[in-house]
Length: 157
Image 1 (cartoon, rainbow, N blue to C red):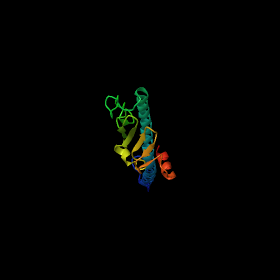
Image 2 (image 1 turned 90 degrees about the vertical axis):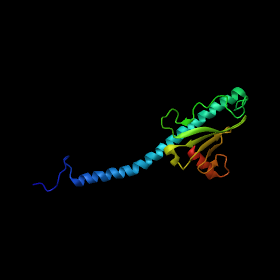
Image 3 (image 1 turned 180 degrees about the vertical axis):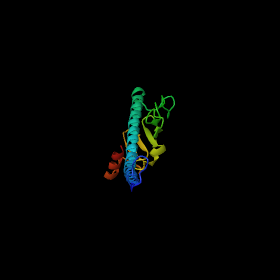
Image 4 (image 1 turned 60 degrees about the vertical axis):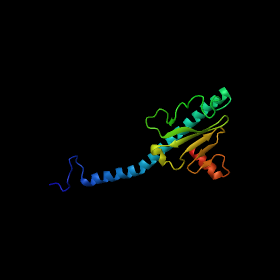
Protein backbone atom coordinates (compact mmCIF):
# COMPACT_ATOMS: atom_id res chain seq x y z
CA UNK A 1 0.00 0.00 0.00
CA UNK A 2 1.32 3.45 -0.94
CA UNK A 3 1.53 6.06 1.79
CA UNK A 4 1.45 9.17 -0.45
CA UNK A 5 -1.68 10.07 -2.31
CA UNK A 6 -1.16 10.46 -6.03
CA UNK A 7 -3.15 12.69 -8.34
CA UNK A 8 -4.09 11.58 -11.82
CA UNK A 9 -0.86 13.01 -13.27
CA UNK A 10 1.26 11.16 -10.73
CA UNK A 11 2.27 14.21 -8.67
CA UNK A 12 1.80 14.39 -4.95
CA UNK A 13 -0.23 17.25 -3.63
CA UNK A 14 2.89 18.69 -2.02
CA UNK A 15 4.73 18.75 -5.35
CA UNK A 16 1.75 20.42 -7.01
CA UNK A 17 1.58 23.08 -4.29
CA UNK A 18 5.30 23.79 -4.69
CA UNK A 19 4.87 24.26 -8.43
CA UNK A 20 1.91 26.62 -7.88
CA UNK A 21 3.93 28.68 -5.37
CA UNK A 22 6.90 28.94 -7.74
CA UNK A 23 4.68 30.01 -10.65
CA UNK A 24 3.00 32.61 -8.41
CA UNK A 25 6.33 34.10 -7.35
CA UNK A 26 7.63 34.26 -10.93
CA UNK A 27 4.38 35.91 -12.06
CA UNK A 28 4.49 38.43 -9.21
CA UNK A 29 8.00 39.49 -10.24
CA UNK A 30 7.63 39.32 -14.03
CA UNK A 31 4.25 41.03 -14.50
CA UNK A 32 5.22 44.49 -13.12
CA UNK A 33 8.46 44.37 -15.10
CA UNK A 34 6.55 43.55 -18.27
CA UNK A 35 4.06 46.38 -17.67
CA UNK A 36 6.89 48.88 -17.20
CA UNK A 37 8.58 47.63 -20.36
CA UNK A 38 5.31 47.91 -22.32
CA UNK A 39 4.78 51.50 -21.12
CA UNK A 40 8.32 52.53 -22.06
CA UNK A 41 7.91 50.90 -25.48
CA UNK A 42 4.61 52.71 -26.12
CA UNK A 43 6.18 55.99 -24.98
CA UNK A 44 9.11 55.46 -27.38
CA UNK A 45 6.65 54.89 -30.24
CA UNK A 46 4.78 58.10 -29.33
CA UNK A 47 8.04 60.06 -29.27
CA UNK A 48 8.98 58.68 -32.67
CA UNK A 49 5.54 59.60 -34.03
CA UNK A 50 5.79 63.11 -32.57
CA UNK A 51 9.16 63.54 -34.25
CA UNK A 52 7.67 62.35 -37.55
CA UNK A 53 4.90 64.94 -37.21
CA UNK A 54 7.46 67.67 -36.52
CA UNK A 55 9.13 66.74 -39.82
CA UNK A 56 5.74 66.96 -41.53
CA UNK A 57 5.26 70.48 -40.14
CA UNK A 58 8.82 71.51 -41.05
CA UNK A 59 8.20 70.40 -44.66
CA UNK A 60 5.07 72.60 -44.70
CA UNK A 61 7.13 75.52 -43.37
CA UNK A 62 9.78 74.97 -46.04
CA UNK A 63 7.16 74.83 -48.79
CA UNK A 64 5.09 77.87 -47.79
CA UNK A 65 7.20 79.84 -45.31
CA UNK A 66 4.82 79.24 -42.40
CA UNK A 67 3.36 76.37 -40.39
CA UNK A 68 -0.29 77.26 -40.86
CA UNK A 69 -2.30 77.82 -44.02
CA UNK A 70 -1.90 81.42 -45.24
CA UNK A 71 -5.44 81.30 -46.66
CA UNK A 72 -6.87 80.28 -43.28
CA UNK A 73 -4.59 81.29 -40.39
CA UNK A 74 -4.46 78.79 -37.54
CA UNK A 75 -5.26 75.83 -39.81
CA UNK A 76 -2.97 73.34 -41.45
CA UNK A 77 -2.68 73.41 -45.21
CA UNK A 78 -2.95 69.60 -45.04
CA UNK A 79 -4.25 67.57 -42.08
CA UNK A 80 -1.85 65.65 -39.86
CA UNK A 81 -1.17 62.30 -41.53
CA UNK A 82 -2.10 60.39 -38.34
CA UNK A 83 -3.45 61.22 -34.90
CA UNK A 84 -2.78 58.14 -32.75
CA UNK A 85 0.29 56.25 -31.68
CA UNK A 86 1.49 53.68 -32.49
CA UNK A 87 0.47 54.38 -36.06
CA UNK A 88 -1.97 51.89 -37.54
CA UNK A 89 -2.29 49.96 -34.26
CA UNK A 90 -5.81 48.76 -33.45
CA UNK A 91 -5.10 49.56 -29.78
CA UNK A 92 -3.50 53.04 -29.69
CA UNK A 93 -1.75 54.20 -26.51
CA UNK A 94 -1.56 57.94 -27.29
CA UNK A 95 -3.69 60.57 -29.00
CA UNK A 96 -1.55 62.98 -31.04
CA UNK A 97 -2.74 66.53 -31.71
CA UNK A 98 -1.67 70.07 -32.42
CA UNK A 99 -2.15 72.14 -29.28
CA UNK A 100 -1.20 75.43 -30.92
CA UNK A 101 -0.58 76.42 -34.52
CA UNK A 102 0.48 79.81 -35.88
CA UNK A 103 2.51 81.14 -38.78
CA UNK A 104 5.83 80.74 -36.97
CA UNK A 105 5.10 78.28 -34.16
CA UNK A 106 3.36 75.08 -33.20
CA UNK A 107 3.03 72.72 -30.25
CA UNK A 108 2.41 69.01 -30.72
CA UNK A 109 1.14 66.89 -27.85
CA UNK A 110 0.86 63.15 -27.17
CA UNK A 111 -1.79 62.38 -24.54
CA UNK A 112 -1.80 58.88 -23.02
CA UNK A 113 -5.01 56.83 -23.36
CA UNK A 114 -6.13 53.42 -22.16
CA UNK A 115 -3.60 51.56 -20.05
CA UNK A 116 -0.91 54.13 -20.86
CA UNK A 117 -2.67 56.62 -18.56
CA UNK A 118 -0.96 54.78 -15.69
CA UNK A 119 2.38 56.17 -16.95
CA UNK A 120 2.52 58.81 -14.23
CA UNK A 121 6.30 59.01 -14.56
CA UNK A 122 6.04 61.06 -17.78
CA UNK A 123 2.38 61.55 -18.63
CA UNK A 124 1.64 63.88 -21.53
CA UNK A 125 4.54 64.51 -23.95
CA UNK A 126 4.87 67.84 -25.74
CA UNK A 127 7.25 69.31 -28.34
CA UNK A 128 7.31 72.67 -30.11
CA UNK A 129 8.89 74.20 -33.23
CA UNK A 130 12.07 75.03 -31.29
CA UNK A 131 12.52 71.40 -30.26
CA UNK A 132 11.63 72.11 -26.63
CA UNK A 133 10.51 68.82 -25.11
CA UNK A 134 8.16 68.78 -22.13
CA UNK A 135 6.49 66.24 -19.90
CA UNK A 136 3.33 67.25 -18.21
CA UNK A 137 3.50 64.74 -15.38
CA UNK A 138 5.47 67.41 -13.57
CA UNK A 139 5.01 70.25 -16.09
CA UNK A 140 8.74 70.42 -16.77
CA UNK A 141 10.60 71.12 -20.00
CA UNK A 142 14.04 70.56 -21.45
CA UNK A 143 14.70 74.31 -21.10
CA UNK A 144 14.20 74.30 -17.31
CA UNK A 145 16.81 76.02 -15.17
CA UNK A 146 16.84 73.02 -12.83
CA UNK A 147 19.25 70.24 -13.77
CA UNK A 148 17.06 67.63 -12.05
CA UNK A 149 14.02 68.72 -14.10
CA UNK A 150 16.04 68.58 -17.32
CA UNK A 151 17.20 65.07 -16.35
CA UNK A 152 13.59 64.06 -15.68
CA UNK A 153 12.60 65.23 -19.19
CA UNK A 154 15.56 63.41 -20.76
CA UNK A 155 14.63 60.19 -18.93
CA UNK A 156 11.20 60.30 -20.56
CA UNK A 157 12.35 61.43 -23.98
